[in-house]
Amino acid sequence: MSCFDALQSPAPSMPHKKIIFVVAAALVNEQREVFVAQRPLYKAMGGLWEFPGGKVHEGELPEYALMRELREELGIETRPSCMSPVGFASHTYDDFHLLMPLYALRMWQGDIILKEHSAGAWKKPHDLYELNMPEADKPLLHQLEAMI
Image (tube, rainbow, N blue to C red; front, side, top):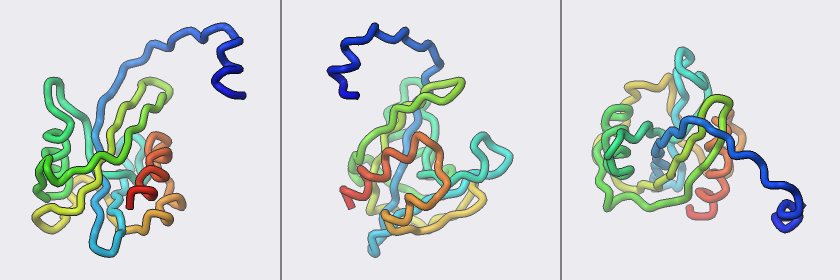
């Protein structure tokens, strides 16, 4: 079915869900590997692999939210000038809708220290497809692989 076919059917009713705005980072090393982190089991979507990042606070710019989240989660420092937009996810879960821009970062200061995740790994972009990831992250894999 194409989008033109969809225009022939009645417009769907608009779902009303809470919108959660988060931001994520694809840290890329010199070997063109991407860092992913495993969510702790006690959190929502526990055990899934994700791009590090987190919620954007009200009034906070996405790039500054990502700086804060990377400092809190991984103990590294970066700046907006080091971030390149990759794409964004717009995904509806059962009880909320998630909007998530993904930024690629090739430069940061400090060594990665897992402060909130249960594990971390460097993966080639094509190997990310094999990981158990949140549904919102999956469409970003193709965009990321095309960019790297």
